Length: 400
Image 1 (cartoon, rainbow, N blue to C red):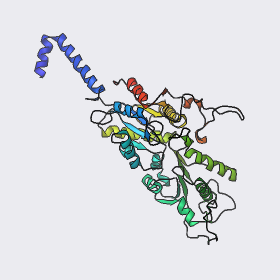
Image 2 (cartoon, rainbow, N blue to C red; image 1 turned 45 degrees about the horizontal axis):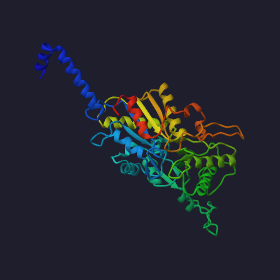
Image 3 (cartoon, one colour; image 1 turned 90 degrees about the vertical axis):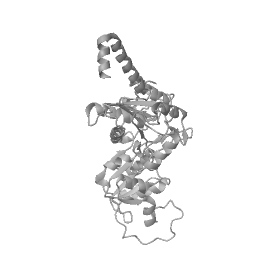
Image 4 (spheres, helix red, strand yellow; image 1 turned 90 degrees about the horizontal axis):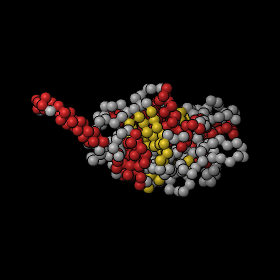
């Protein structure tokens, strides 16, 4: 074949050059259509609630988007991770749920729950932690690396007089427990079902330095370490109006602690969007996914698609700014794309911090992230995930 090529080059150089250009064009067409592809240099960070699903209903535009992202073998053509601020489910169960909803195999290491980056907080993994939330709490906490756990229900059973909201509490006062080991930290993995019980007992632990059966004349400060995931004030399900998220529960806990002590509740770690730690963690998973698929080119451009300006847009823009000054990994940019199928609607006013008594949309972000209006402006606003994927593919020069 090489000899034939040399002969053709000698006798018909113009024809040979045209044939080479045609072969290159065909290779490009195969690459763009999902055939023999050059490695992708971009990846997608996709929110779930309000982008892929509303409650348990898959958004039709999301199904159409994945028809463009999958090759004929049902494999993703680019690296994708699903980044959710939910945390009341295991990583494996969430991957199975997404696989059934989207119609292709989603692996557990493609799913980032709000608390997934807590695997990195190894300095707290050996502490005896009070854990709050719902779903497979202990299973999730152990998967993160925490070894010694006490649930709110276990604490309530050990000290039944603490939960005074419970009308089924004992009618007689039991003897104080002296054999219950001190709690050394608080792990908040998501909103609980019984808010009043969790708020009371978590506050008891903080005010008593981990010994809720005793009590102290003065609350210790700094208090025990508190790790929390998911600061979303609101999220979107089947209801027409947004529902309270874990951020609302944290707001209640912070207000109670400040009212009782005159001091601010401090966090030793906050994970979930818009935390930088979550985006750095996601970047690492994209790189590992690309390596597993044999895509050697580094993932330089990230596109984060979400429906919540305060978590999805703010977080992506914050990470983009971080990438301009700190280049620890391969990524060089993170573009925020806002869809209108969830919390955000095109008619919603821009978030502001209104003066007392004035009109305007209040700031829904967590106090520790502050209010930076420029970070709430998405690089792109589109109707749904299908339009978002079309936008990304056009920007990256891939065929639609």
